[in-house]
Image 1 (cartoon, helix red, strand yellow):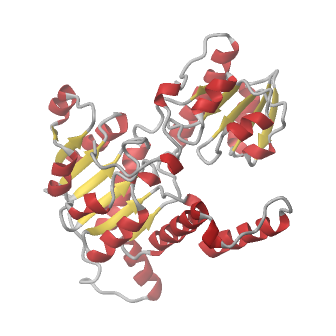
Image 2 (cartoon, rainbow, N blue to C red):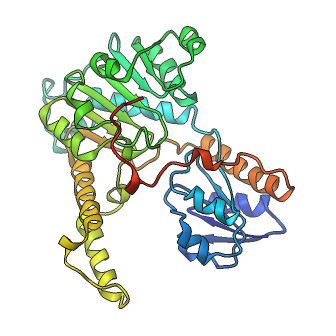
Image 3 (cartoon, rainbow, N blue to C red):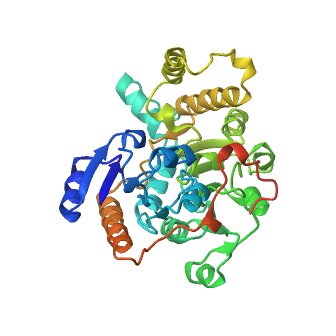
Length: 365
């Protein structure tokens, strides 16, 4: 079988070549670089798979995403083409919650500011005075495996804990010592909120102007799930008004700004359009989707530079142990498919609509 891997490093490449001997293995920087006769494709979250990509790769039979979430894949298009999609059901049960508290502590103890004043050889105890987690209330949106581990760790810090989930688990609440509340109730009670839900129609822009308006003032918000669960512009307004005292973001709506400056991204796009003789270059005002993209890009760039925000480049999952679990499950998924008994299949019913079709959530979870 011809198998292409995208977004892998040297260690991953060595592992996959060893574990998939006898197959034709190809490693690509971008999914678009994969050969048209690729039969199986292993991707990560930055690779977008749509109907056009499938049309350009007619031999494709299997997509294995090295992630739990799959909002970067058009599952309906895959179903129409008969392309199986598999995911990694679990790998970040410990590493993501640990990163959640790394972000939380970094905000509470003003580590960003402390590093800046240390570099400048300037010091003030008052300016760097932090807050304790002990006695504060943590709300966890999404009480699955990761959310529950966040709740466990919170207890070790002496925090009061609340959970919010569309499918509450009373037994988990009893064993972990937290209580379920409605989403609006959590917003009013929590000093800290950790987001641990997937991106779906119901969670897209779950945190927006309406929901921020009822938050307890001085909230610290942590997001290690998906960037689009928070409306970027609304978060900027909440930060500037003091409703949100600090945000720890491992994910953004537009994560390109984690790698390049917004001005460089826009310049590259302009050059690309100018060089594409098949794409008419129209004024920005005639393209509403383009305007929305530019606005999102600029808002996310603002968040990266905001003094009360700590941004990490989508690395909550990135521990040696978690990557080992991801790689092993990926190989097992490929072997299972080839044996005729595919595992960890992602069904069409679980499909999340593309962001362009989603509407801000009004009912909350």
